Image 1 (cartoon, one colour):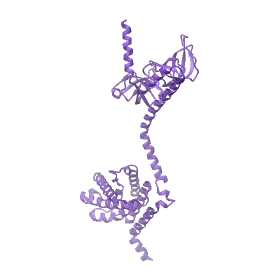
Image 2 (cartoon, rainbow over the protein chains, first blue to last red):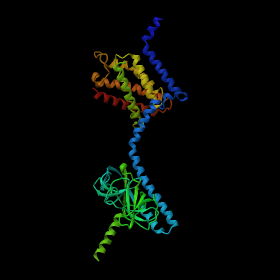
Image 3 (cartoon, rainbow over the protein chains, first blue to last red):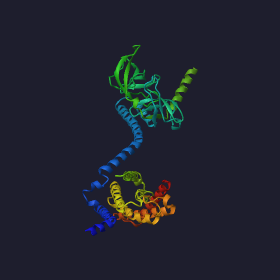
Image 4 (tube, rainbow over the protein chains, first blue to last red):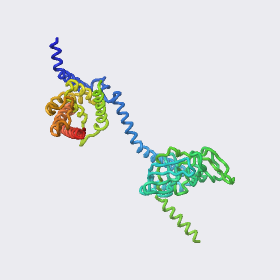
Length: 285
Length: 165
């Protein structure tokens, strides 16, 4: 018996080696038809977890891209919906020609995706910095929107960065309209709550309801028509009593603003030039 | 449970994570995958009991296998490599080194160490890809895989060891 133990101890490495190799070969050749082998696969608890964590981390790195794509896509779809509804309205209503023109206009918009680099909401004149500048095609007075709605207007441009004047700035004034009712007004912000702004100069004879949507009018060359701004949550009389003042709950959450799109209207420059030419010719007379 | 044991477990986890999360996704020219985890075997010191290193290699291989869904393959090849490793250490490591030294370039010199790495890595790659070829056999693919992975792996191991102190 001692001899046997001596023998085993002497050649223990050979025994261990051979046993291990046999187990390996058995595993190798029976893997595919061995039903209980899940614990040997990448689906077992440990390797599954490692892969899951890894995928989580990888996904995290691609989130930025996905976000950007989604913002752009969202904005596009929003415009598209607006566009189609107005087309339907054009088919049934009377202002067919004008709407069709708008549709043509839409196609010419080029969206420049950008990231918010710095932002504030607690001042009276807030400004936003984005990471796209002249090099990327951003010009002064272009509109800026995010997936939820309007953000503001490009105020200054640098080579690689731009400053945007958001709705949350006392100097901001954006031409807007009550969706599907066609009354125009100007959106102003007076400080305080970053979720509400005021739509001024709504005519007294206007008919509208609370919670009606407020969208861009498209009458200024900054924003195409139909980009959402917010909804009416309260109505006051203006200080001079000649118009209504509507409190608008903004659809854009400026505190969480991350990805935005600059709306590049190729025709804008042309339009502004024509406008200036017209003004000049008026002044001469 | 001594400090060496814990140290080695840590090293093992490190090699597994690096291999599974990074190196396994590399397929240079569709044939060469760096299999740097063999380095774990090459580091076994001379005085380690032979059967212990064989067991280490076996379990190390099993864990790696479970990640890549190839049970038996890596463990077979690694066990064989670990079994042969002491003979190669005996060939190339000078006797006057203390018994618990790991084989390294500093101890053995560039030529001897490189030969040691090249030989053992070749045995490993040859065994591994031959086993893999059981499921799908293609002469050129088989030879290219062995040569590709062998060269990439040895170069990386020699490079790592040359900067190791």
